[in-house]
Length: 260
Image 1 (cartoon, rainbow, N blue to C red):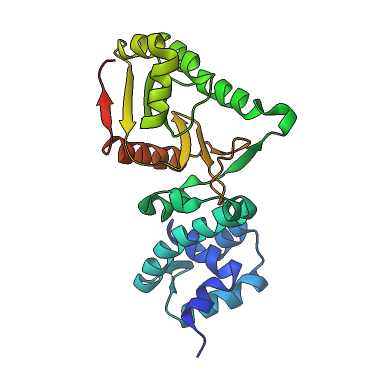
Image 2 (cartoon, rainbow, N blue to C red):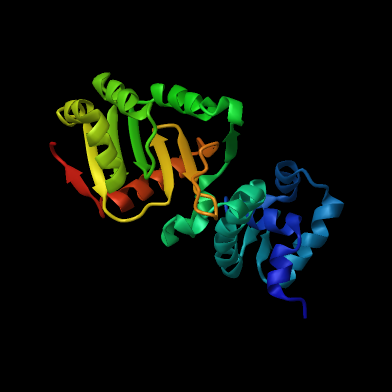
């Protein structure tokens, strides 16, 4: 007997059909138009799924059975995860993704339509320029960082002074560096009602920023060196929600700095 896992995963047409039917029953013509397939190519796949009681037919419409509904529901995040890893496979292989808290690593598929911003040695600030341009279009900002960049203090202070909601979570070492070199800026920022600062006492091995329309993630290489040249970015709503949950995760484990 054909393995059910193979039935579901070994055919792109079958996978796509199961995911499509999660949105509701569809006629053969609707299936053909949406999935860009022919009847001769799709009907054998429909029969295979129907024989395994994953889909059924009522009048002219195909629908998910209860068993098919459960299968498709779990198939969707699995395929999203595989797509995320395949799209930038080398990036994931080279970096320490284990630094991402487990509950967020398990939902990495939420990052959606990702792409890499990469700069060469001669243009090390290129990614930061794109970062700044995206931030300036935003009204809210959340960031988590274990690294210090000299452009950040002035940039974030100006953003807050213009009315943007700015919330930062820093490691203790980065916070100490900020106090040492930019005490007045930190003090001025903390006096603003729309700016908040938190310190995480543990180790963080990732950096990210999220706004109301933009998300950027930076990771360490597997050898422990921070990758300052490549950022993983996305503008998908699911990525922004993932980032907000990650911020809350670190904030709940951090102490808020009220004043210096």
